[in-house]
Image 1 (spheres, one colour):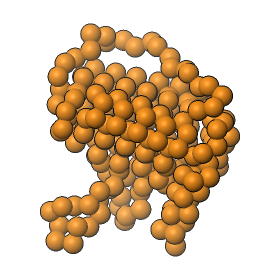
Image 2: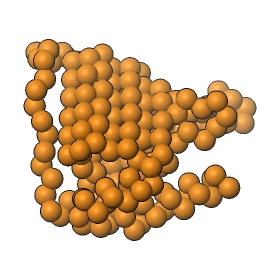
Image 3: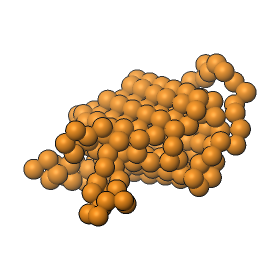
Length: 184
């Protein structure tokens, strides 16, 4: 029954809510289905949300159009779920997954692991974040990177799989994101 509920919610949020051109109305529906989203945070149009009950987004965070946020926490003793901090910039078409198949299992059983994106992180377009990853405060994930392991605070990572290529020169972050427009 839970699987049917999740399919219906995911379909409703994607096909109906995701195409509403007003972010405040979309936010209302996301909250109604259990997604915790902080003040000033915006999820742009056509985002795909899996199991919003286990997704928490901080204040002033932007999620780009066509992004995928996976909050699945369905398996017994699951460690799934998604936590996104404050003032995080998630670009368009980013995919954040908390569930995958165990390729070393004879039956390819599903596994779930929590993903944590700490404050002031920037994730570039079309990056993929895999289950069990923590992205540290102020880190930058380059466009198209595939993140399979934790990213240290202040690191800049790129590539497939993502590897550290540099460090940010900042150690303190005070900026606030905030570009919501009427039709996004």
